[in-house]
Image (cartoon, rainbow, N blue to C red; front, side, top):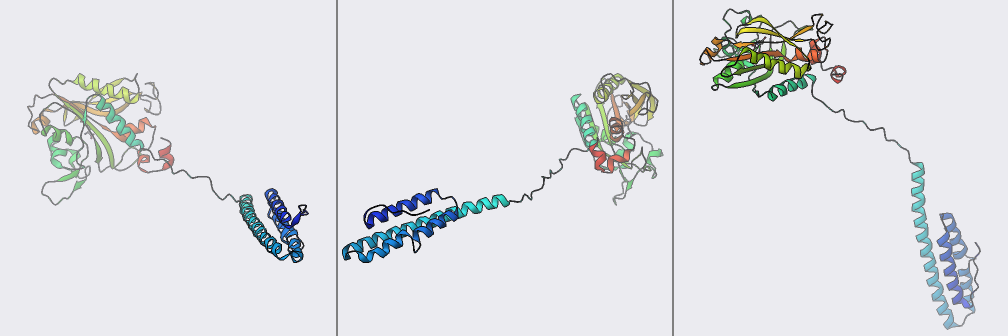
Length: 351
Ligand code: DAH
């Protein structure tokens, strides 16, 4: 870049210098180029210096005017150069930072999304089905009196279930014996005592038994009790409700079968089976070759139960009770009930 001065007279020359510098700065795109402009125009051998040297030969008046213009032009050029340098330096720094940028971010880690426990899902599904059939939901205490757990349900004093080997007794300090309820049936009596029929109720909840824990037994598990107390309730109502439940739970084409059984609080009593949903009744590993799976106990509420809650013993009603883990075991093809409580994520995520 060679500065040229073609204008006539020192002032014209100074204006031309200013214009050239501004043009040169306009096209400069590196700090190096700006420094070249700076050296060639402001340096000791540059055009401004040359004009300055020529001042000595001018008349006094003109010398002052030209000197002032020369100072103004120098100031202006210095400021323009400083501005341009600052602008280029900052954009060069940004470019350098961008080029040297090191990506140290890791792929994001999604927090695992939770879900309901398979047992909770099964329990909610069962409750939903009964709510759809017109039942209400009640819950009762886990620490229950001996009276509601046994006596009110026509379970005699010498019944095996009342032994210390089968039931957890709780020492509350009160004279009345308390137990961890071994079934959800006590709520039959509590609900009936709370008011006259009709009652259409399901009672989900935790129960406890002094069972040796193995693949098919847990010391703490869940049950769902259900009962309907109303005028004219018959055994066929029971069968109809349980069939509707079983089909919604396991499949439309299922058959329901009832076997005579015995429970102190129902008469007659039945064990209820559904045809195996895995093999459709022909016999497989799920039903152990039986073709049928027992899913619950049921029956017509015993007159003695009605007596103990102060109802007329000719009142009619049915009751049933099922184990939630047992239903879930069939639904999810689980072979060991303990897996539901081990909290192994590999198990939980696969259900
Ligand atoms: N309480 C029974 C049990 O724990 C289950 C049961 C059977 C409940 C028959 C009932 C019933 O209401 O009618 O094994």
